Every structure is written in structure tokens, then in C-alpha cells.
Length: 190
Image (cartoon, one colour):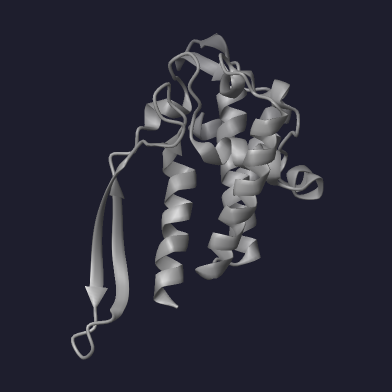
């Protein structure tokens, strides 16, 4: 049913594009253009086109005190089962993501809500036809963003290339696994 798919799409956009701010616990951090389509024959709803734009990408790495990054990071850490987390190299321990949880009070009520909404997002993804394999790839990409967010680079001086970051081998392998590429490719783009 088209109405269910549109509502599911909005749930997904909200998870990936909304964040808790000081003034609004579910603040949209992007713009979107929505075009609803109706049948010429009977005037019934036929579909929708949603075009998101202007995502506030800086929210991934910095926020005001007391604010959260995009909801999906918290939903994934709280809601994904342990086997799936192990498969994509994601930790269940919020202390492993200090940049994500800095300056916010995160309690068991927040975690329970994040688990609940994560399940709603999975249901929404399923309802628009996103396969389990593609969902795993999405979760793995988000885990890679979290890995990058927590990385500390050691800069070394090179006679031929100037200052270059030195990435620990275990992090290279983890990122390669999460992104589905070789460790050498990770090294080349970082």
C-alpha cells in the first residue's frame, strides 16, 4: 500500500535526519521537498516523491552541549542484536563512543526508547522492501562512520608526502570489513 510506504519512508528519513537539540527532542536537521501524487482517474493517493536536501552533516562530529547527533546512531547501538553488532564490528558499550555520548545524560529510559524506535525503523525498512542484506550493509556503513568518529590519528612526517595520518592496522581492518573494501583502500583514502 502506497500510504504505508510513504509513512515508512518518513520514519526512515526521521531516523537518519533528525536529532535531539536543546529546544526539540526530534528536530529535523535537513530540508525536504515532498510531492504527493494522485490518480487522475479516481483522485486517490497514488504515491509520493520525497527529495531530502541540506543535511546538517556537521552534527556528526560536533554539537552543542546537551544535544545528540542523528538518531540512527543511538538507535543502532541500543537496538541491534549482539550477533549483528559483532558481525559489523559495533560495540554495545556507549563508553566506546565518547564523542557521540559527550555532554548528554543518557539513561536506561533513553536506551529503551532507542531500542523501540530502532525496531520501528527496521519495520519501516522492511515495509518499503529493503532486504535484510541491504539493511546489514546500511548498519555496517553507520558502524564505519562511528569507527571513524572515534579514531585518533597519529601524524607522521614523510619526506615525499608531508604529514600523513598513521592508522592502526586493527582499525584499518575493521573499517575495511565495515565498508566492504580492502585495508589498502582504507589506507589510500585516509
